[in-house]
Image (cartoon, rainbow, N blue to C red; front, side, top):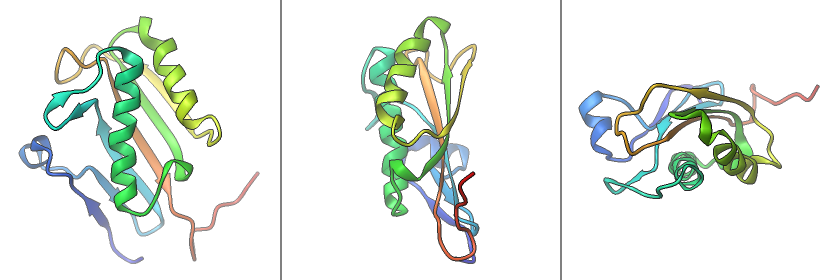
Length: 137
């Protein structure tokens, strides 16, 4: 691959703010923008665990459009609005990624774009292939 590939979902913020849901770089790295539990314009799931699962679902859907999946994820970032939600967000992450074990960060932030949202996630994935093979340490 010698050029960028971009995934858009038609979400209103993508057009309004000028961004793509995901971008694949020529070296096989895929960057997925921040994802929340907003599905079809509505917040899906109320508690931190459900919002986390749904947010990662949005990210997985973007990866799927590029022919990648959960096993290709190499890094996650989770932004939480409350420290009290760390265990529930962590539980969701473990259920989704326990066999993958990506590098991960969890950060407490002062707020998200909608006060009903308690978590936003970012994902980075890697497409192994000619010129960008993985190496184990």
